[in-house]
Image 1 (spheres, one colour):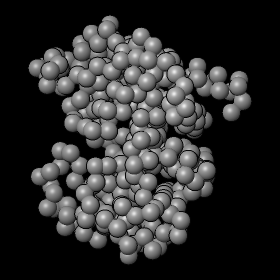
Image 2 (cartoon, rainbow, N blue to C red):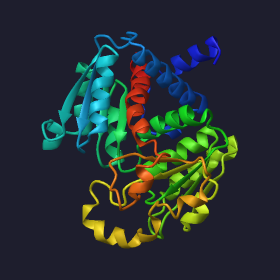
Image 3 (cartoon, rainbow, N blue to C red):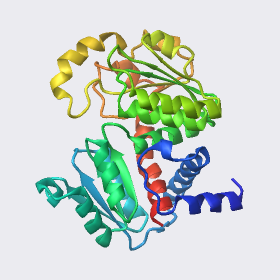
Length: 319
């Protein structure tokens, strides 16, 4: 990007909330990806980049996590700031204080808030009440930080984004929603195969198709995994029962029995396909061990890039 354009994009992101990818222009998303790659290179080279020196991020967790907590906390440290872990059980919000009051109070102490929770409305209400940037670390509706890291990973591995095809096999969940939004904004094609009753949110699908019409992206929702995966550059899946859906485990195992990503299914993808999974994974359930641990798997590149993508988000909106 040219210097003037990059500066304009940098200014447009300052102070913004990061709740869903649909809230951002394609060039803003691409700027964040490029910034993530730049910060990654600086970290690998041992180059100090304390762009958030003296700043603090409050990290609210109402859902447990491995990658989200470690990557945000380490990311803030590498940016020269500090991440403060805030358990949902330890905050007054867990005892009946309004989200608005919590947001107003935390805004007086912190420079940014990250929240990982269940209901998406909580993130929206927190952002409305806060006077500092709020980052969606995951909700039942959306997982934008993971999707940004995923598109960074695809760009690094394939050298481009536009025109590539992603096949998503499995539950039409928060991960599906964010990948769809990113694909539509960045010009990738995406096919999603889900069993009946487990499709992505209808409003998300419509929003995605509206944006896809502007970028030339092709979005398809279908039932047949073979149809979705045909000639795919990227094959993606997620657990069949996400956190909070444990009671549905047996029911979902039956519904998704024909949706395992395995050696037989991936034969329909391109020979140089890459396999992706946001983790944690249930080997032998949504994906066979041979696929997830095979040569085409880049799951740990994805996991690493959560650190760099989130550093880019924090650097852009909190600087």
